[in-house]
Length: 338
Image (cartoon, rainbow, N blue to C red; front, side):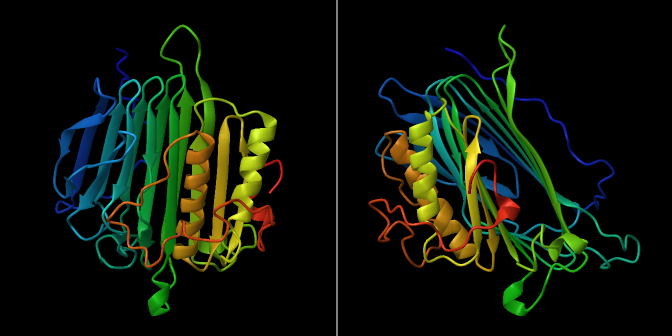
């Protein structure tokens, strides 16, 4: 059986300040599919990360929540997650609660510039493996500095679906990000471990802070940013992809904010900018359902740890409407189309 290797580290910011009391938690997981088609996991975590009890979905997918027991990140804290999926295995990884990043800019006389908190994600998927990475939102408090690097290595036929929702400032307390900053690097590469050279599916580097928080081509004063990426196991024909994108755009109906989605060479990219992390999560959950349906997989089972007050899948668009969404913005439009 093919054993995917751990992709090499890279792309992390240099010169990160780190206090002697900083947490450096890590989780390392491996998933394999048994003879009965059920995905099993092994591995563990070091504090403050903790692997929770797994839940088995009807199709044999392993749904596994991760808990950050420290209650949030401060400057210098670092988390890392490595997940290796062997051939044909299926998993859904999520988080038990929203991740909080507390302010560090101007909090210390010794380091008034603040210190970065960070998260490093490495996913290696073997042939026909399937990983859904759907953590709960990240809340970046005023003066918080946070960077995340995510690298995904895919063998032929593997599928990776990843989403993130970020709230910039504690808007419930009328607090914006201030002098804080958020950085994110996403690198998705398919193949390359054998004689056939691999190719980059997506390389994206984003940074928000300062003028970008108010600029029209940045956040335009909105506090919530969301991104969803699907690296599909194979290319969809033009008709199927067009129908999927049309359905995803219809799923924006009734949700506040600017939303856009478009095709990748092999998959799709969706972006949210607006006032509501709930709206972003609802839209992404509906897209998740659409992708499952296109692949002929079981209806998503919402993780028990998710805090939804209402079911984002229980909507009148469940059967598939073709009505265009009310709010689509060119700032986030992956070409071509919206």
